Image (cartoon, rainbow, N blue to C red):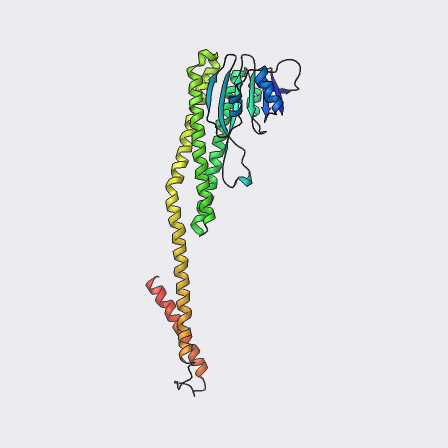
Length: 306
C-alpha cells in the first residue's frame, strides 16, 4: 500500500501518485514488487529496508551515497487483545535531497493537523515525524500511569493474581519504551552532529534541538514511571499476601465460632444419662447454651482484636 504527499503552500497535502516525483511517499507493509522497486530504483539497502519492518530493530542512522537512512522507534497502536502490553514498532525514513520515503509495517496516522499545515522541506518533515513519535510515547506514558493506578487500587482490595500479572506486564512495557526512547535519542544526537553533512537549515537545526530536549524529557518521565512501578511491585505482592492472611484469619474465626456451639449440642446428644434429659424445656436451654457460646467467642474476638 502506498500514499503520496506534496508540499503545497507550506502544507503537506495527500495527492494521487502521478508521473512526477512526490515530496513524501509512504509505503505501508510494502509488497515484494514495491520492495524490489525501492531497492532497484531508489538504491535502498535491502537489510535496512527489512529493518524498517522489524519491531525488534534498534534505532540507527546510516549514510548512503544518494540518501541517508534512519530507523527510529514509535509506539504501536494499543488494542484490547494486547492485554496491557504496550508494544513498539520500527519506522524507516529515507531522506533524499528532494524527497522523503517512509516505510512502516502497519497503517497508522503519521501526521497530525499541525504537521500537515507547517510542512516545509523533506528534512523538516523527517524531524516532525520523530517529534510526533516522542509525543506519542508521552501519550502512552500517561495512559500507562492511569492504568497502573487502577490496577493498584484493585490489588489493594483483591487476592487475585491477574491484577498483579497485569502490573508486571505494564512494567515490561516501560522497559521496551525506555529502550526505544533511548535509541531514538542516539539517532537525534547523530543527526545534530552531522547537520552540516545532511544540509539542515538553521530553522531545521533549531527544531532538531527542541526535539532532542523533548526526547530527553520523555525518557526521564518514562524512567520515573518505571522506577516507581518497580519499587511498588514488592509492596503490592505483600498486600496480596496480607489480604490472603486476613481472609484465612476470618475463616478460622468463623470455623471456631461454629465449632463451639457444635460441641455444646454434641455433648447433650450422647446416648447416656445427661443433665436436663427430663427437663421440659431442655431443648431451649441447650440452644441458649449454644448461642451464649457463640456470643462469648465473638466477645473474645473483639476484645483481643483478632
